[in-house]
Each structure stands twice: as C-alpha cells, then as structure tokens.
Image (tube, rainbow, N blue to C red):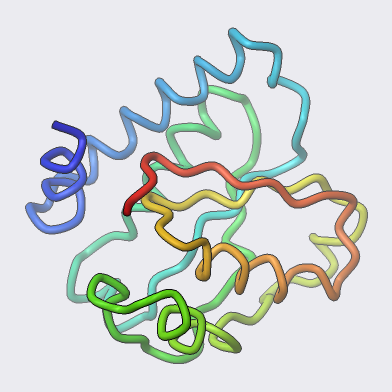
Length: 153
C-alpha cells in the first residue's frame, strides 16, 4: 500500500498526499516528545529541471506538512547542482557515486549552530541523505537528523 501511495505522490501529480502525510508524521513526532528537537526542516532538493517537469518536489511537500504540524520553518538550504539519474536500479556503490558532490548549501549562515532535520520521501541505502549531510556539515550545524516516509530495499 505504501508503495502505491509513494508512486502516486511522485508520478501521478498528488503533492497534497505528501503534504498530508507530512502533517500526520509531524503529529506523531509531537505525540512522542519530538516537538522541540529541531530548529528547521530541510527537504532534499530535486534538480531544477526535474522539479519543473514534475511541478513540485515531493520531499519538500512532505517537509512542509511536517513543518506546519511541528510549527517549524521549512528551509530550502540545499541545491542539487547536478542532475542525477534515478537511483532505482543502482547498487549501493553506484547510488553513492550518483549523488556524491551534487549538493551545495545556498544559505550557509542559516546552518551554523542549527539543529536540522533533513526530510526525504524514501531512503534505500542512505546515499542521498549522506550526501546532503556532508554538504551541510561543513557549515557547523549543531546536529543533523533524518526523516523519511519509507525505507526501500
């Protein structure tokens, strides 16, 4: 069922599903005492061409829903400088090679001493999240955590 929902979010023009699931995710975090753990949410960015073609970034929609529920800002601090191929049919090494060095930080001053929660829709090997964290880490955040809607195989 979750695979079908994610497919609709990404490929069937249903960004409202991601926003709603993000809101529900934020509610769960609030209920379990994670309401004061972060200063901002940071969605994993799409490359500008892919975002334009899709019309939205599903990870940003998820993060916006979470941010609303958690009463936190959602900051687009990362830029995907280089378009990448889909990670779907890649092994662990190929996934890392595909995303290493593709992210840059657009607003470094908004990273310093911040507790950041990087948000993505799906995590398989963690290569994309690790690449995002490496880009952010050089600007000395207090902490970096991750939230994903689903874990793939």
